[in-house]
Length: 247
Image 1 (cartoon, helix red, strand yellow):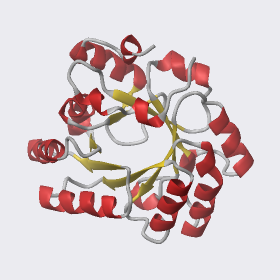
Image 2 (image 1 turned 120 degrees about the vertical axis):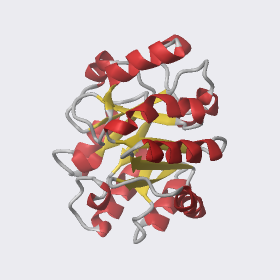
Image 3 (image 1 turned 120 degrees about the horizontal axis):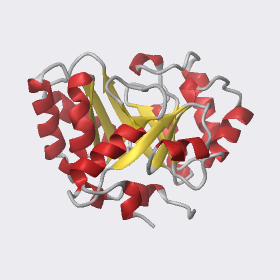
Image 4 (image 1 turned 90 degrees about the vertical axis):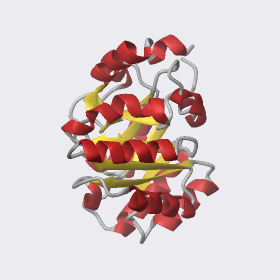
């Protein structure tokens, strides 16, 4: 199996209807590469380090090493945005520093103001990509507010901006849809969370969102589908699986 780069794994052409969405599979430290590949096709791996059973650096690096040649996004999600990391921001910063050389990209929340700039700078010094993310588990803010979030994330040096909001009703879905269309050519990742947001995970890539996320065991966000479910829906609506379009 040949190695994939982060850039190729999320190439902008994936937003066209004739090329299927790029799938990120979100996992903790309990999986093997063989087990993941049996669960369905995917393009990138998000290691949810905040959900690991152990946070010793040797263990984390051993887990990262399992998943070559796939591009790996390292996420140490804060509790403030639905994550499981219980340490201090200083502890989180130190973990990012130790792992950044071993992954292709990192994901850090826009709300992590105490360490955000330093994490972005360290990642860019190592020539790694940075996803700056925003998660709202209550509702979907108005587009004006989402636009402010988007601009602020890029002002901190984001290479990609990920915005995930909770979809309560049709109006929320329409808001996030319009926001996605407004920024379709600006390296955006958008996701609707919750049962009513499931549609976004399948169809937003056709509107401009670069990636969609799936799981292989337990969802890491409300409304997240399994990798096998996502593959079935992509084949149904896009006419091909990821494996059909890649070497």
